[in-house]
Structures are given as C-alpha cells and as structure tokens.
Image 1 (cartoon, helix red, strand yellow):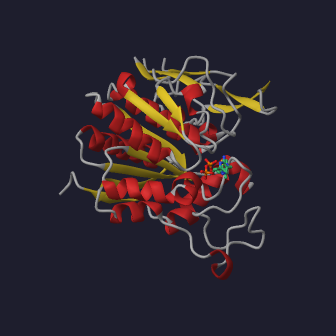
Image 2 (spheres, chains in turn brown, blue; image 1 turned 135 degrees about the vertical axis):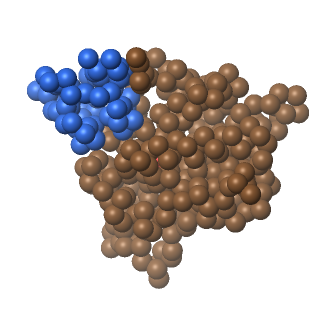
Image 3 (cartoon, rainbow over the protein chains, first blue to last red; image 1 turned 180 degrees about the vertical axis):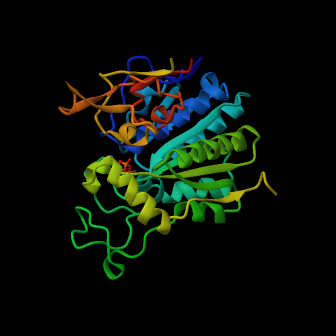
Length: 251
Length: 70
Ligand SMILES: Cc1ncc(C[n+]2csc(CCOP(=O)(O)OP(=O)(O)O)c2C)c(N)n1
C-alpha cells in the first residue's frame, strides 16, 4: 500500500530552488498535498511573491501569477474579484515571505484582512529577508544578528518586531488567523490541519484567512538545518506562540 | 516489506530525515549529491521500517518520493 507519494500538484521532474533543509520546501509540499486532497488543482490561482518563493510557479502545478514585492494580497484581491464578476468562483491564495507580507506589503495585507477579502494568505516567517542575504526584517527578534543589524536588533534603533498572526486576528474582516511551525512531525501535522482550515474558510466564503508559518533559515542564521529547528523549538516559539488566534468557524 | 524510495538527484543532504527516523534506518551514503555533500541512503537489513512516513513528511525537497507499506 502506498502511504506517501509525490503530490499530483507538484510538477514532474521539478526540484525546489530552496537551500538544503529550508522549511519553505515543507510548506510548499503541505500546500500541494492539501490542493490534491481538496481537489482544487483546476480552480486554484496561486499568487507568488518576491522572496525565496519567487519561483513558486516552477514547481507548483497550478495557475500562478507573480506579484510585485509586497503586493500579493492586492493582486489576489483583483484576481478574486475579476473572476467573481465573470461568474467564476476561483480559489485564490498568496504565498509570501514575512518581509513581503509584513514590511513592504503591510498596508495591502492588513487592508485585505480589514476588507474581509475572501482570499487566503500564507506567510513564511523566517525572521529575516532570506532571498536578499539575510537582512533585518519586520519579524527579526530582539538581539538577533543579521547583516543589517550586526550588533543585534535593539529597541532604540530598530524598534520591536511585529507579531503578524495576532495583528490579522484583530482585523474584523478576518475569519481565520493562526501561527504554525514545522520543526517536528507533530507541528507539521498541525500545520497541515490549520492550512486546510484556512482554505476551507475561503471555500465557504467566510472572509480573509491567514496562516503564518514559523520557519527556519539555515543559510542566513548560519546554523545546520537540525540546529535551526532546535532554535525554533527552544527560542522562537516562545516569542512567537504557536496558536490559533482567530477561527470564526468555531464560534 | 515496508520501504521508502529516495531520489538521489533531489536530496540536498540536509539530514533532517536521518534525525527523524524512529528506527534510524536512514544514513549518510558514500555517494556525492549535487550540493557536494553525501546524500542519504535507506538501509533496512532487519525489516524494521514501519512505513510511518515521518521521513517523507519532514523531507523539504520531496526527495523521499515513495513510502510503501506491506
Ligand atoms: C520593490 C522591491 N523592493 C525590493 C526588492 C528586493 N527584494 C527581493 S526579495 C526581498 C526580501 C524578501 O524577504 P521575505 O519576504 O522575508 O521572503 P524570504 O526571502 O525570506 O522568503 C527584497 C527586499 C524587490 N524585489 N522589489
């Protein structure tokens, strides 16, 4: 009996462009598995963003649009509304980094949530700007050393990091907001469950659904994949609690 | 016999599967992969694999392409 095989919605003979041990790969795999399980491949439009996941369309076998840096939720809004105006209900989700969602794109992201736009956003929080070489990002934690904060992030100069999932939960238009992690099997199973719930929220038309995925960045953290997972378990998950912050389907 | 299939061309030698396997059936091989490190191999002399698929869930590159339970 086949317990696991490569998801149908991953392109044949493609391989991920991510660094060895990067959680981006696990996240894309989960998304592909859920698209298969929910039979969404034909009606999905994925919105890729600038960042490490910029070439999402090279391995995810669904229709895909590349958005300018930070504008994924704005592009998703247009795609969703334009199809709706033509009488077609498409499934639209964005796949973004934390710099994309919560820094340059904070305005379009939070306003999509406030408008209750019926889309799903997946945000990979790896606490830095991964693709451009590990600069300080909006989610970089206090004391963390990056290429643009060589003495560590400090409150006087850089201010505090943003807790994205909590902020989205505060928006009245959002239907679902959760933070998940991928450092062990238990968390991977939970992550899959929460992403699935977010997708269901959109299919039922409840409004903006959001999943923040706490991820590693072995290359820019200068740690082995295993040590970077330990860092998430022991340090980052204390600062960024792994929790469902809002789920209107429960009320 | 339960087993897994590893695609050597996809393995990036992150060794997360080595750590996650409950029976320690995955190990470094002596074959170099495309990142210049040794890729992993599956060795199960005593048929200990239970096809729990934890390695496939963890692998970030879908290099574990198949898990079969028998
Ligand atoms: C308008 C604009 N400004 C800056 C850039 C450069 N740029 C490309 S990716 C990136 C950072 C992406 O970081 P993040 O969104 O956290 O994703 P990650 O790479 O960490 O997955 C930046 C600043 C750009 N492409 N476009």
